[in-house]
Image 1 (cartoon, rainbow, N blue to C red):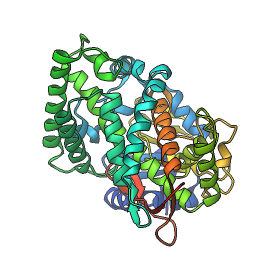
Image 2: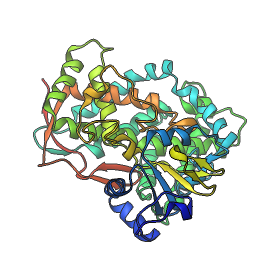
Image 3: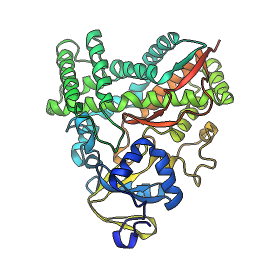
Length: 423
């Protein structure tokens, strides 16, 4: 038995309770989405905490309709309310309308191309130093190591933290903050708010120190230091960047190494480009990053709360008040768009640009990740430096399972590989 669309105004979905569906989604999000797509197609209704009935969308044409609507009609901040204990009420995750656009306007200059190019040398140096310390010829979990590296990059390059003690304290605080969060769609642990308040206090201390000692610079902190906006808004922006930027690049790179370990021909092309190509050559590396983001996305869904009816393709009208969730997983693994969609084939992206609504690692519309350009550059630089030094080999039989952890879909065995020297 399914939910009748004509009675509810919603597409059909599995006959399950909110609690049961939420527990299932937390344990195996991609498995649940795959099974629902197999039975109901590219759109279905799934009851999930804390939203209630969610309309899940896996057709790029429907996703386009969602992302094209104004932020007054389709609100992401409202749908992201469960992040509040981790990020605070003034996080960009939770802002809608003019408040969200203003926060983006204040931060976006720090992620423009000219600045990200200047940051590449620092990222390369930090990566080389880290990889030189990784073990060889023994199983090694890359996820934790890459998280430490990307957090160093975030604090040093994006936020400009150059005080060693402040750097160390913020590293520990952000790690603790992310540990308090369960996967999207689940509840947050009770101590999340306390950990977030401690992290906020450290961010405020860094702002005060920078005002005293080094107000200049091209990082995000320098751009926000003398803003006339309330400090709580500035703290909210910085906390959002820390939370959003900590796990995402690290998880993608860990998945990339897990995939490349099992696809030696692709790894050989990356190694050849990294070691023998010109510094600007990155076609093979970029293709690997894009394909990894496609087949191993960071999150399975992005939520939007409807404040006006939304007509989808085929004439189905969703009522206001419903949460609609474009599914990154379903869109990225849609056979109609990507033949043999589960296969890892970086060549799909050689000489092509991913379609805006058929490849969703950074969301879309006015909520598209403002750090997308920086993240792609960061992963390109890091993967090049890694490939110059090591070659990953499988450390276990079979692909690593996709599991939900903190705010991401991560390798179930921590990105376990065995590294050999590349030269």
